[in-house]
Length: 361
Image 1 (cartoon, rainbow, N blue to C red):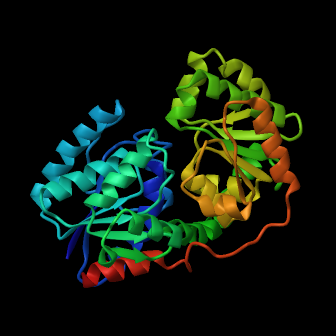
Image 2 (cartoon, rainbow, N blue to C red):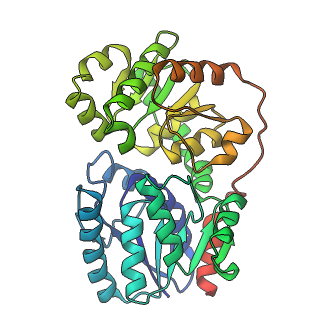
């Protein structure tokens, strides 16, 4: 059996690492790895492949950045050529990026079965490009691997046939268990930055709705600056966010209040997450990793696809329109200590269940 796996962005590398390890251990399975090049900076891409022990991609399409339509169109054309050449039995896509949608569409139009890892997530905000990608990919897919029961229910409500839906747990949890231990052994990021465990807040901001809106951008960074009066705020700065701060004339001022660092590799990021007192983020993946490592989280968005974490109190949603709201949310999360700690995302064997189902399909 030949499976083409398509990745392109940092969160997908993490998910693919867990599944690729299981695929390549399965007898009779050949994986062809395609990297679209959606994340092309070395700190955003190459270092992840090295640290996560992902095999070198069989195809690197080098698409790079662009508007959503242009980027997705170029990916669709390039992925189609790979699939015509490889003629796989399955195409495996991950998450909710433009790479995900392009891979699913290219396969579906060639009548190649599609399997979607992390299916069924919904923020119910169609203004988010990721939401459009999720919905369209799910409806183009033949196997939908859902990480949670809530994701299963979303797919059922949308009329996805029951026989296509499989609750497998979250491959991000597989990765958190495996790489969390590795990070403790190998990362020296705390020493390099002279940070004490539980002595800092960790922040990440990268979503276009936050970086491209001057009001939201200013509210977020002014709110974090206020929080930094109480405790240092460390922020690995995404290239898009750095460019946005520079465009708005905020970069120099922000660097006075926050500890801005270059993007870090996955193992360094894991150790920063595990040892933070609190995480503030607009990332879907980081929200979950905060929960995996039992660190409270403030999500700088109007909504989240991980609603169960909000219901448990591990995650606090705050509209990034007011610096005072952001500061209050940070203080409230730091003060709240009594939280349930259920296991929502499976038993750490999601990748094996995915490979088992694909092998028997």
